[in-house]
Length: 492
Image 1 (cartoon, one colour):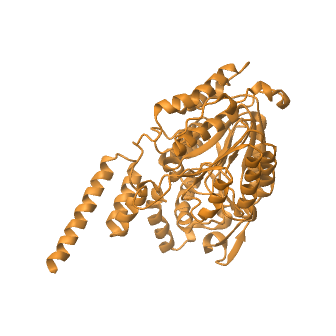
Image 2: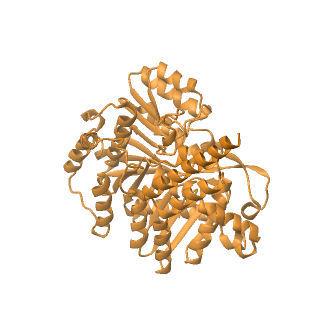
Image 3: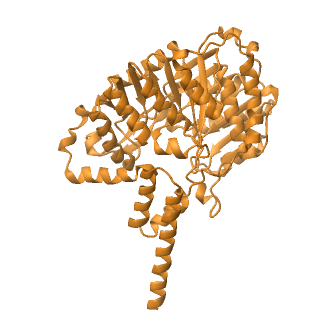
């Protein structure tokens, strides 16, 4: 029996060594490589299980073929060529070229934007748009719950299918794992085309559980689009329950956290970009290539009612199969090119090294860089890891703010009263490296000023780091814990 024991140990060590070599040969970011090696070394058995589910690198897999991408973008490019009097601002042409050259995120003009800062505003607006749909409704969402909000949306979609409207829905299998299959079957039985994104079924697809579709995109009749941070669930209206740590909250009592988020309703040329993003995702889940003209209605048919303008927008997507982290590169360029200020909101702050470098560089050169994260968080490991990062950027001159009026799930950035962006992307490793994300970038003074005001309103409900706690007074063991968890931040 003793030989069996030693044989088991030897085999396990061999598996660990082979896995470590495989990680090294992937040539990932050094921080991520070291994090996985530490997990494998110090978490016996558990470490290898975590790697099987969350660590395997599928970036090299060609999930979407170049041919399908070309066909899906032909229509968008054709409409782009039809835009008249398109004027690209010279000061930000390099950023626009970055997105265009890497992911064919073409700039579109003639856009109007409505901003929603909570679910009480967003859900009624979405239901009104669904009610007005005449041709098709496309929804890609990370979470849709079997709760009052989810069922309200489902009932509205079923009514439209019965009226002859095409409805397609993509939900993330992991994000919506609590939602019972009967919820989706009810919609399928009524004629709604429903697909999960990368369904996780053991043992197949276990290596892809780490790669999730975190996008929140809705397109109605090719004329109205929604994008932002809100999913379709009651918590985005009423809030969540959470218990917190003493350093950040002042008490460990459970409390209901009001949900603060940002979502946009867009009309105009940018809806082409949202439609293209959805149809590429649809090809991935359904293997149906949709390129019909009817999904890209002529701008001239409804733009006059919007008062043609030069509000430029690009819908930028990123995914783990892309050779470049498009959205992260955009954030870095905005930070490094900013002249006056960059204001950022993110529910999670576990930044990659390029983002850290850009934030520190901008702050040291005199740019007013402000970062807002929630005072109340829904994930303790993330909170502990975040603490060391915010301390680091604060030392470089970044003004760190903690939103105290609830859980701030908003993902937005605004710079120099001209560039602004909102979408599904958090400032963390997972959003930049592992998730399928989507943000819309605007080049427009009016839109930037409105999103800037959203930030300033949130700032009025925030406290600075110095007001929350004196980091020097935090006990040594707590600081050590935070630093140890930071080593795992590339994996959180």
